[in-house]
Length: 202
Image (tube, rainbow, N blue to C red; front, side):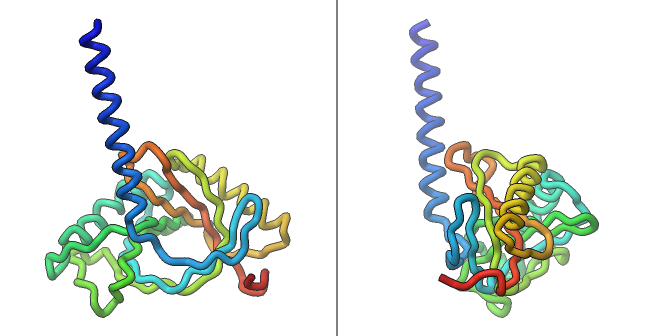
């Protein structure tokens, strides 16, 4: 029994050390730049400048289907699946726009790159794009994301914006910041684009 307890303690200790290491590694990962414009009780408003992204378009209509079909393709591109066999650093967040007809998933690429300096994907279904600058409203939640939790926070954000008289447009989108093996300190966000005349920059 004592040996069993010792083994379990070692396994648990190693698991916790791995999770702590994972959190520390993620904290060092380049994150898409933005400017905080306004902080509310339940959400915030940000300004995102243009960013270079690798994006796939899919017929998937759920978080799980889009993630399973798109992540591997995009990961293969940054891990050398390109005409230069070049390794490109992973950044955060991963963008997912789940629509009724078409959906997209995109990796934000490191800020040192632009469309002219990036290698060409071997997979022709991957597009290298530059996003439009935009103001967005953002609501954050922890734990693991799924369709139900994303929809729940979409509704919360929508109600908060309506209560504040802030108009929005386009799809509500999901931003994911963590690898699936990270259990501690997970960060998820739902965002939606805002018209600039809703607020004044502070």
